[in-house]
Image (cartoon, rainbow, N blue to C red):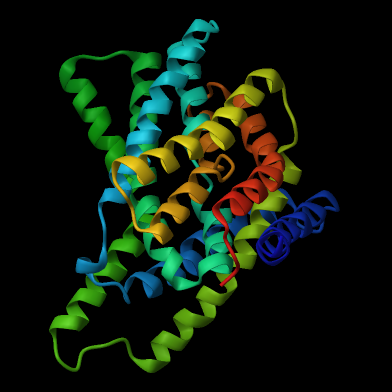
Length: 319
């Protein structure tokens, strides 16, 4: 019960503040875009760079990637097949599959894990995040491109390469790898380190990242609202909040024997609501927009309950 009071209430209480701000028009759609840009291009990069710069490569366990993405890809293609049996075209079925596995690991996941485990919990989370956008968003963009345009073999390779480049330009991924590289460089070059003044600036930006991310998430929900296809979105929500964390925990516990902290972080991230990038992809390609929007809204609301249950089952206490 302490975990609910110490983690769930602060996280979703801040999301609720953002929702009220968005509904009351204190933060217009234009203002929200500005806050989103500041959060994603300044605050989160500072947090990610600073956190990863303290990590050594030998401390990383890549089994967590096999666990998370093995489970994610398995459920992704199963959900796509389910979508096809429900009469969806390939593009919409791809959005349905992405909605069922893609977590809001940045906007909600980072604050959530920070409150629960501190910087120790961010290391496995950031490993997942660094690959999540690169793998899942690239794959989904590629499949939607194929469904909408079709192409020759050479054209398909070009689309796949373009999708990879687009994902690498996202500010989250370069920040993680830059921090990891800088930390390794400092560890091997005597006397090299982040200047105190620069580190204080990064720390100030990093401190602002979690609350701003949560306010941004809440305000986004207020502006998005509920659209059509809520029944299909509810199915994707069940897959995302129940089946995805169950598969991740089972494989991490019995197939790979992950470190308990890393297993807990992977499971919690799997139990996060669907990320905003799901409906951004849907809007970009103008396919499954209503479905993606509803999954993000419904799963965010439902995750208050499901994350509370997961915390209790895992025996998590706030750091």
